[in-house]
Image (tube, rainbow, N blue to C red):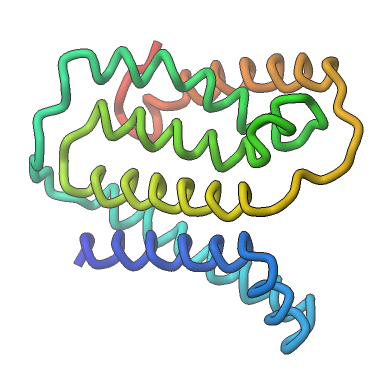
Length: 184
């Protein structure tokens, strides 16, 4: 049952977020049902998906699919800072946003790939593989769109760097409490 919950949660969150990423799908649903209804359904579906993922992942039986490489854990730890930096860059108007077009999606791809290098069990493969597939698909659609015309600032890259570093430390320290795995 927990595997079904995990798969269902990953599918729901990927579908809802991809609908949001594909502008013409999102706009047609907003026009058909209203902006308020769309975002209410989107929020409800995303929340339900997150709960399914949490329960499905943490109630798992450990089924090994592949042996992670020896360097996998250290590699994962080393690229997580980049992931947090790019994730926080989504909220600032720095040049990283101009280069990646969607730094949050790039951050999810980095996070997912790193965790696939460090974990080889079935539930990790489904969850992190599902998020990697979503992030790469979302990046593909973002790269199809023209870059928005806006002014970028180097100081915003610095703000994102500092904010990302703080988030990296906080999540790294809290990681033990919500996964049982020590990061630092």
